[in-house]
Length: 252
Image (cartoon, rainbow, N blue to C red; front, top):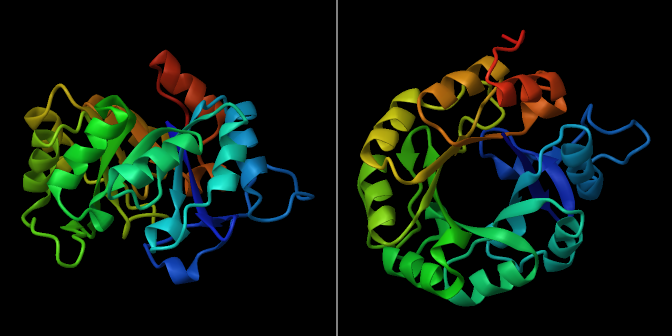
């Protein structure tokens, strides 16, 4: 399980449906009421200390939207000891190196901001493919392709192009499902797992229960991104420990 941190203007915001203009600072059961809403440092500490989760997916929404990387905050978050997977609009080796220098264990290269699969290959060569995750960005199952990019096709075709460009990790992320509780598309997970058995496969968007996480693991998913269900308490430390032991939890 990989907790999510969406950052806008140095605050952690709660993502819902990919409508970024509506995202508000996070209020979470994981931190005390005395903590200001959207305190990114407090949330990353809680992910690690309260939940025992050592990885964290960070989406720098300012950078994804064309702004500068929130490097100072990323360095502070990395200093807390979590391994950060950071999507900061990386589209070339220069930004990839900058994000790594800011403390990212791995840089996420999103389809939404990718100019070409040649650029993905160049990023892999620059920082090492083991430090790169390709994000198959979708909206209601439709690939989110950058305007003017030469690639097109169905999600499975674009995933294949990413693997051909050297991607060793794939993240399936449907932004329309984020915060909805609708869950991850199991057909797409199964299809990609069969097509790319040697690739690390992650997914996120709308995961609402420990039971769904267990089902996704049974389909061959290596990791799942979770945010809302952690903040409202539907998934907690007991669920995480049960999943680690390979036992069903009591959550539905």
